[in-house]
Structures are given as structure tokens and as C-alpha cells.
Image (cartoon, rainbow, N blue to C red; front, top):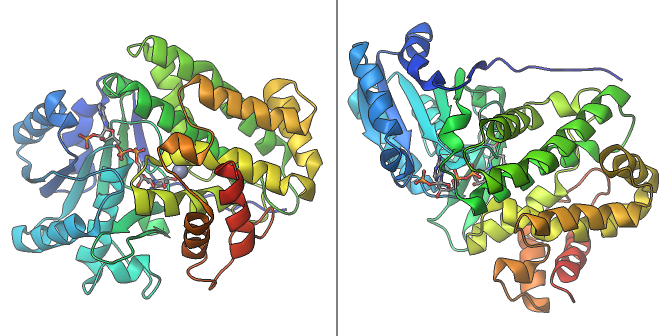
Length: 389
Ligand code: NZQ
Ligand code: ZN
């Protein structure tokens, strides 16, 4: 058992933390900034205006690029890369949810590395550097604010591909985390976020080989906290305590802490199975995860039922593994999340399940998973189970 833990992002957490944006930018040497944002929430909430004033007051120049959509597209990334070059940008500031952060990271890789940015996502080239990126997070979910990942959708191909790249260059310089900025997040996105946060810990918890008991116990605490606070945030979207706990859980769930002591990075099969759904059908990532997790769990349970027993006892005080899976699903439903593919509004039969399974394995070119290694046939069966077939 050994630990490798690298998490170099400077965190500024608390109400009003965004007032320190200019200070952070100065600290990391920014002089001309690309402010990258989504489809309008930062304008509606007034956050963009406040951030821009903060920069102007400090004499920091900026250029705007909005328009990032959920499941962020490579086409806008290309536009961002062009802007970085033509405008002499030396720092990218992402203001938004995970999609905005991931898009900003992609712009950073492409602007630094030249060539076709998609090469980094389809595995043709390795990321060797980035234009520095900082983040102001407005949605607690993906953990991109401290993770090494960026997930981009290629909308220029048919079929559409959604691919992630993980590299330490993806760890942003600073993350400004103000729980109040998440007050305006819709109930649906709050729930999607809660599921995603839980899944980043669950994916790491399920792995082959030894585990560090301390990390398992941290994982259970994180899962219990999300289960405790997500309903509070749904009832009272302006509960600082609920938003703060969820936000910090989101960050720590995906910065590597929850894998410390694991001999590998975890399972991640559910993420791969979900990404195929959100690539082709543009569903929200968290909802897609909720829709497939139970089926995955039932499919792999026999590999190591004791791992499920420990999880159940740690999170719910439940020693029956089958009931534990049911309890997670019950929680997902209680916060309005689907627990099958139909609940995503998709009508999957055998043909759709086959196509999706082949998409996950890149047409039989790879397997996924670590707790249980899954091939195309396994993934097909999981899709079928999640489709009630
Ligand atoms: O675009 P705007 O107008 O900002 O609206 C967004 C969007 O419609 C809205 N929103 C964000 N903050 C808000 C708000 N609405 C009101 N008030 C606010 N404060 O919420 C909607 C969803 O935003 P998005 O950024 O797409 O959600 P999320 O943070 O869940 O990001 C999802 C993306 O991240 C990827 C997912 O696959 C998906 O593409 N992931 C990235 C990871 C990473 N980089 O480490 C790991 C994850 O596993 C995940 O795969
Ligand atoms: Zn995720």
C-alpha cells in the first residue's frame, strides 16, 4: 500500500470569496484574461458583472467568451483557442459549472500545445502543458475545480464522441468556492450534482486490491453528508450550511483524497457507461449516473459482497448488500433522480443497448472497470438491466 497525492490548487472558500478574484489572478501572474462562462446564469445572477468590476478595479484586462453548454462542445473550445492567440491571453478564468471549467481546461491545452485539440481527448497526443486556468465555481457537482480531468464532447463527428483526459496540467491554479453562488442552482441540477459527488467517491471505493480503512471511513462520511444535506438544499436552496457542506464534499470527492491508499484509481465503469448516454442523448451527467448505478452494482455484487457489506454498514447501518443497493436507489429517487434509463426519457431496447455498449468499448477495442473488468457483452447486459429488460 502506498499513497500518491498531488493536489496543487489554491482554494479560497467562503461567502464573498469571488471578491478575491483579482488578487488570485495577480498572484498567478495574469495580465490579460479570457473570462469563460456558460449560457447565461452568470449574467442573470450578476456574478459576471461583479467579477468583471473586480478585475477592472485592479487594472486587469479581460476578454469574454460565453456560450458553454452542458456536455461542453469542442467547437467552442476551438473558438476559445483562437481567441487566446489573437487576443494575447495569458490566463483563462472559468466562471460556471463543471462544463465551463472543462471547456476552459481544453482551451488551455489547445492554446499551449497547438494542432488539433481533439488529439488530446482521443488519445493521439499527450497534454504537455497548458495556459494557466483559474475557476470560480457556481455548481457543486463534478469536482473539476480540483480534479485532473476535463471532459469534452466532439459535436463535429457522427456519432458524437464524449471523451475525458486526465493530466496534472488539468489541475487549476486556484478555485474560488463561494457556496452562496450555488443558491440559484435549480433543484434538478442540485440533485444531479449530489449524485455526481457521491459517484466520484463510490467509483473510487470499488476497486481491486487493498484499501486503507481511513479512506473508506472518509468515504462513508462524505456519502452520509451528501445524503444529509442534499434534501436540505432542495427544501431551502439558500441554506448556507447545506450548500457549503455539499460544495466541499464535491471538491474533496474528486481531488484524489478518496483514492488514497488504493492501489489504483478506482472502477469508473459507471462513468464510462454514463458518458455514452450523455454523448449521444445529451442527458445530465448526474442523472445518467443515477440511472445506471444500481444495475451496475447488482451486476458486479458477487465479485466482492463484503465490500458492499462494509459500505452499507458505514453509510446506512445496513449489513445486507442487496438492501444497500436499494437504499442508494431510494435516496436517488427521493431527490428526484431516475434509477433507470427510462427515467432519463430514453426508450432503450436491445438494439440501443448493443450500440451503446459498443460505443463504450470503442467498438470492442477496450474493456472498462476495475472492481470487475467489463467487456461489451457485460456492458450490454448492464444497459439491458437498466432498461428493465
Ligand atoms: O450555462 P449556464 O447558464 O451557466 O447554466 C448551467 C447549466 O445549464 C447551470 N448552472 C450552473 N451554475 C448555475 C447554474 N444555474 C443557475 N445558477 C448557477 N449558479 O447548470 C447547468 C448545468 O451546468 P454544467 O456545468 O453542465 O453541470 P456540471 O457542473 O454538472 O458539469 C457537467 C459536465 O462535467 C463533466 C460531465 O461529464 C459534464 O460534461 N464532468 C467533469 C468532470 C471533471 N472535469 O472532473 C468529472 C465528472 O465526472 C464529469 O464527467
Ligand atoms: Zn462524474
